Image (cartoon, rainbow, N blue to C red; front, side, top):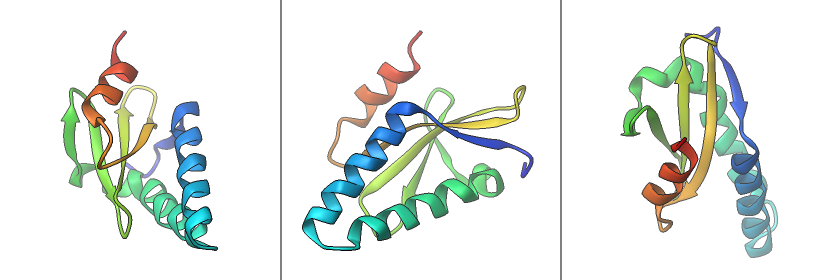
Length: 104
């Protein structure tokens, strides 16, 4: 599985930045700590994907340690990539966000 490329979609990049900014406003360097934890999860996806539960349809979910946020992703075996579609907090309407991003 380690030969899968990880792609972070635009909305997920925006969410990471927004969460970073929010934490930095609360405490200096806390945003950086959040990003370190988030990217640790993201970077490990090709190795840990089989451990994560399905959320809706083909979308899988993994928790970011120390922070109340989750990474949502889709694995594409044909193209050999993992697509990060969202980074959402536990107080957000996760189902609605994911359904909007996966409906075609």
